[in-house]
Image (cartoon, rainbow, N blue to C red):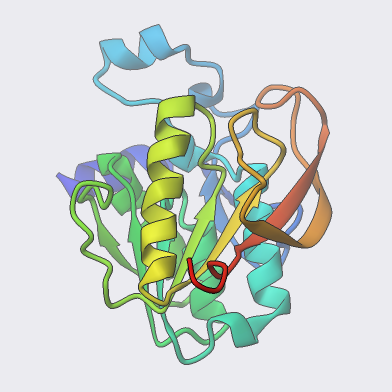
Length: 222
């Protein structure tokens, strides 16, 4: 099954460098590939979930950029890339010297995308399709990275609660976000801000102001 998914990805993407992380190569869709134009209804007819793995979203690009520029965040540490999508953040962590990197996403196509993209960049990235929100299987993680996770209110709340729990166990938590409606800024410190090129086919602007945030330690006595 994973080989079929890899074949589908190779047929519907091309290898290219995301604009904000030109040192990485990913299998991504663009205007010349059919998947770019397919509606959710058309995708459903062929049994394909929305192909979030086929695009380098602004939050992921910003977070990957920050990790590449600040390798000390992940170097020699065990890392989980939550909602990995294309694997751009996981690959950046591996490039920056993480000792172990796990990409996690419930979309079964992401496993194939992460495998292809990790191979394209000459790094090792593990993958799980388990829903980590239902099972804290990443207790071993020293760093948790999450890009563009706040599209919908219930999901944003669930993910942030999970990240706070991981942070409470001692994990460093970084989040990349391009100003999504349901992103909570309380309890977070902005580390960096970028102007990330994107496309009007995906976003409301051709350049998205995107920030990387670190989860704050709990107040003393809290």
